[in-house]
Amino acid sequence: MTSLGSIHDIPPGEGRAYAVGGESVAVFRLRDGSVRALSAVCPHRGGPLADGQIDLRQVVCPLHLNAWDLTTGCSLSGQPDLTSYPVRLDGDQIVLGE
Image 1: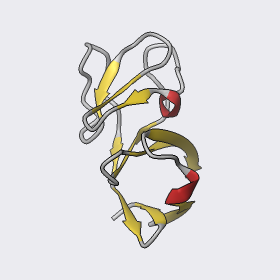
Image 2: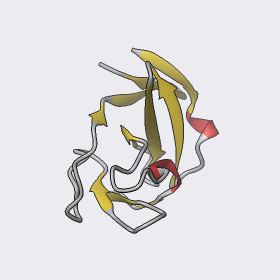
Image 3: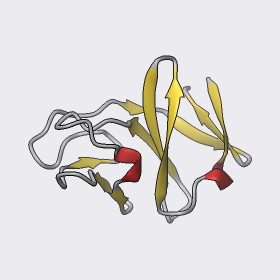
Image 4: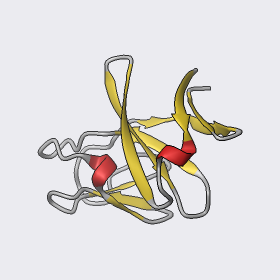
Protein backbone atom coordinates (compact mmCIF):
# COMPACT_ATOMS: atom_id res chain seq x y z
CA MET A 1 0.00 0.00 0.00
CA THR A 2 1.11 3.52 -0.77
CA SER A 3 -0.21 6.68 0.87
CA LEU A 4 -0.47 9.46 -1.72
CA GLY A 5 -1.52 12.34 0.52
CA SER A 6 -4.71 14.13 1.42
CA ILE A 7 -7.90 13.88 -0.64
CA HIS A 8 -8.16 17.63 -0.11
CA ASP A 9 -5.31 18.03 -2.62
CA ILE A 10 -7.78 17.00 -5.36
CA PRO A 11 -10.83 19.23 -5.90
CA PRO A 12 -14.14 17.36 -6.36
CA GLY A 13 -14.64 16.39 -10.00
CA GLU A 14 -10.92 16.50 -10.85
CA GLY A 15 -7.87 14.25 -11.00
CA ARG A 16 -4.19 14.42 -10.09
CA ALA A 17 -1.23 12.41 -11.34
CA TYR A 18 1.13 10.66 -8.93
CA ALA A 19 4.41 8.82 -9.58
CA VAL A 20 4.16 5.41 -7.91
CA GLY A 21 6.85 2.77 -8.33
CA GLY A 22 7.90 4.00 -11.74
CA GLU A 23 4.31 4.30 -12.98
CA SER A 24 2.21 7.42 -13.48
CA VAL A 25 -1.16 6.94 -11.78
CA ALA A 26 -4.13 9.31 -12.08
CA VAL A 27 -6.35 9.52 -9.00
CA PHE A 28 -9.81 10.98 -9.54
CA ARG A 29 -12.05 12.44 -6.84
CA LEU A 30 -15.61 11.93 -8.05
CA ARG A 31 -18.36 14.33 -7.07
CA ASP A 32 -20.08 11.58 -5.05
CA GLY A 33 -17.01 11.49 -2.75
CA SER A 34 -15.54 8.25 -4.11
CA VAL A 35 -12.07 7.86 -5.64
CA ARG A 36 -10.79 5.94 -8.67
CA ALA A 37 -7.27 5.33 -9.98
CA LEU A 38 -6.14 4.54 -13.54
CA SER A 39 -2.99 4.76 -15.63
CA ALA A 40 -2.34 8.48 -16.05
CA VAL A 41 -1.17 8.41 -19.68
CA CYS A 42 -3.47 8.06 -22.67
CA PRO A 43 -2.26 5.17 -24.86
CA HIS A 44 -3.30 7.05 -28.02
CA ARG A 45 -0.87 9.98 -27.90
CA GLY A 46 0.30 10.22 -24.30
CA GLY A 47 -2.34 12.70 -23.16
CA PRO A 48 -2.50 13.61 -19.45
CA LEU A 49 -5.60 11.75 -18.28
CA ALA A 50 -5.53 13.38 -14.83
CA ASP A 51 -6.46 16.60 -16.69
CA GLY A 52 -9.38 14.93 -18.47
CA GLN A 53 -13.08 15.56 -17.94
CA ILE A 54 -14.78 13.10 -15.57
CA ASP A 55 -18.26 12.24 -14.43
CA LEU A 56 -19.27 9.36 -12.17
CA ARG A 57 -18.56 6.80 -14.92
CA GLN A 58 -15.80 7.85 -17.30
CA VAL A 59 -12.73 9.96 -17.97
CA VAL A 60 -12.28 11.69 -21.32
CA CYS A 61 -8.76 12.47 -22.56
CA PRO A 62 -8.26 16.23 -22.99
CA LEU A 63 -6.34 15.79 -26.27
CA HIS A 64 -8.49 13.64 -28.55
CA LEU A 65 -11.65 12.88 -26.52
CA ASN A 66 -11.06 9.14 -26.09
CA ALA A 67 -12.88 7.75 -23.05
CA TRP A 68 -12.35 5.04 -20.42
CA ASP A 69 -14.47 3.55 -17.66
CA LEU A 70 -13.24 4.95 -14.33
CA THR A 71 -13.87 1.70 -12.45
CA THR A 72 -12.46 -0.89 -14.85
CA GLY A 73 -10.14 1.08 -17.15
CA CYS A 74 -11.95 -0.44 -20.16
CA SER A 75 -11.94 1.72 -23.27
CA LEU A 76 -15.26 3.25 -24.32
CA SER A 77 -13.86 4.54 -27.62
CA GLY A 78 -11.83 1.75 -29.23
CA GLN A 79 -8.44 2.54 -27.67
CA PRO A 80 -6.40 0.06 -25.56
CA ASP A 81 -7.67 -0.44 -22.01
CA LEU A 82 -5.97 1.28 -19.08
CA THR A 83 -4.69 -0.30 -15.89
CA SER A 84 -7.10 0.20 -13.01
CA TYR A 85 -5.57 0.42 -9.53
CA PRO A 86 -7.21 -0.34 -6.19
CA VAL A 87 -7.61 2.92 -4.28
CA ARG A 88 -9.45 3.93 -1.12
CA LEU A 89 -9.66 6.62 1.48
CA ASP A 90 -8.37 6.09 5.02
CA GLY A 91 -9.80 9.12 6.76
CA ASP A 92 -8.70 11.93 4.45
CA GLN A 93 -5.65 10.03 3.13
CA ILE A 94 -5.60 8.47 -0.36
CA VAL A 95 -4.27 4.89 -0.18
CA LEU A 96 -3.26 3.07 -3.36
CA GLY A 97 -3.18 -0.74 -3.18
CA GLU A 98 -5.03 -3.46 -1.32
